[in-house]
Length: 244
Image 1 (spheres, rainbow, N blue to C red):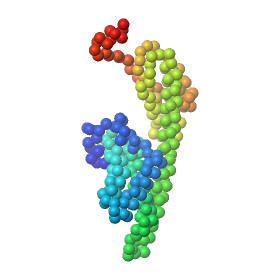
Image 2 (cartoon, rainbow, N blue to C red; image 1 turned 90 degrees about the vertical axis):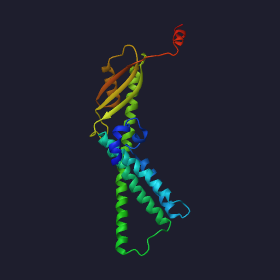
Image 3 (tube, rainbow, N blue to C red; image 1 turned 45 degrees about the vertical axis):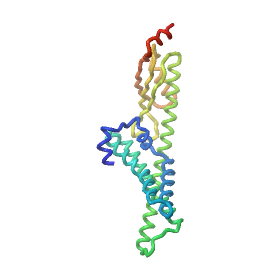
Image 4 (cartoon, rainbow, N blue to C red; image 1 turned 135 degrees about the vertical axis):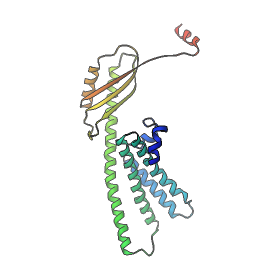
């Protein structure tokens, strides 16, 4: 994490890197994947015919990338993304403990000559891991619901912009909705950033804002970036042929 914190401002892009963006908003699917990874690693440990490097690879794939994303997010001052990646790390860590412990127990692997006190401590640690996993699962479920709500509202906003642009040469190139961190249930207001490309006159943006607020059910502010369309030809003879 510390290494990514220092090198990311120089060599790592944030917004367009799928390896980063896919780890800042985990959901319940991340928990299921982590449980499978932990179970596979524990199964490999319990088998003599499986290489010793496989468990290490499974754990590294689950734990190292989220921590790296935490460092990258902190270097960009993206606190929400850093917390999301850290939740993914905690999810993977707990899932490896639970799934790994369960697989080892089912495989008959046990520690011999263990004292009653150490056995009690192991049971308590396992119970705490189960409780922590349940809490994380609730957070992941809520985060997944919030992501679905945001995708739905983004689709509604995109539909309103498409309707607003009907009859013009403009097309939508990108549209994003940004909410305040305290807006947990996405009740708005939201800031809508719209990028369109084309040429010609546009209808009043006030009409777009009103229609979008009616569709979403909460106030919006809009930033509309208009990109002019520029067509270039090579070779130039192609342009003359098109004009003719």
